[in-house]
Length: 223
Image (tube, rainbow, N blue to C red; front, side, top):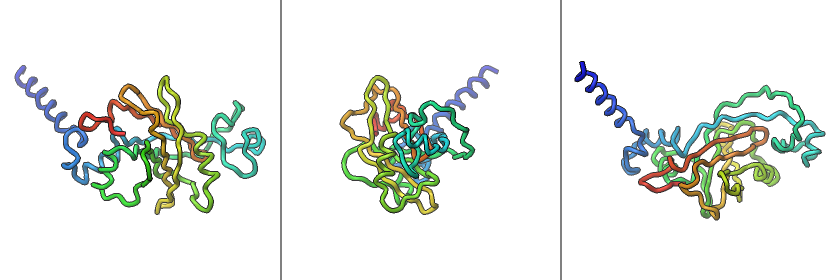
């Protein structure tokens, strides 16, 4: 009986070891296309964020928040603490990728993804995929300016990082990708226990945690 139990425990341990994800068990050069897709589906660098849909602001609330005409919402702070009706529209979880991380870029190549974001310069780059109801047409300068005001990388005890720029990309399926470029002037390190990415895209509020201690590859922090 004891031997059978011991064998069962050993076998379970072998299964757990065999089940290690590709980014732990293999070098990047050994990743298969399926491994790469696993990295892009759910890994320390890619999360499925639960989002909230904020209520539509009234004309009075937009004026009080500094938005006139038919502008989009101004964020939670712009609601001035007034009771709001619950939003009826539901949006499913959307993908948030730490695009500038080497494992993500390598996985996109291995998985033969077309249309992955590109940028110039050195930055922490995060992308929010499959955003609904975001029309990327004409002059998006004001739209991007609004988004920059309500996007942050937050760390405990440190100043929040704000995006230096934002890119809007229309996807073939009618959804959109929003790409945030944060400056690396204030370095994120393993001493930062948790990073919170928050953003508002029109009325969609996004919040997602990342944990640097989990975002190592070959014993090096990959951001």
